[in-house]
Length: 94
Image 1 (tube, rainbow, N blue to C red):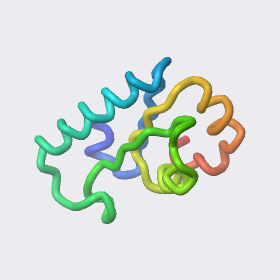
Image 2 (image 1 turned 120 degrees about the vertical axis):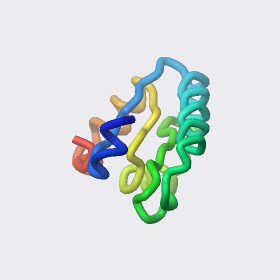
Image 3 (image 1 turned 180 degrees about the vertical axis):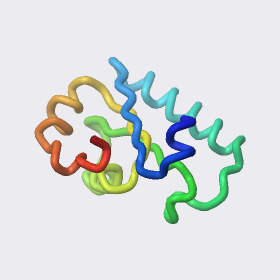
């Protein structure tokens, strides 16, 4: 989190074995970010944007996460099927 706050180019990938854990951690991170009262909104880069990238994520949201999210919560299957096969689309987080 500290690196994300200091460098707007940084990204983090959190991999959980089940979707429920990813959802719990996303809610915890969002609560922490809200408590920090960071300036800006998710649209202007001032706020750390986070989301879940899994089999239930709609295509439009997946595309948005690839372009904008700085914290992505996912599972091993989606890393294998949805990220490694599209590694160029995820290049900004490499």
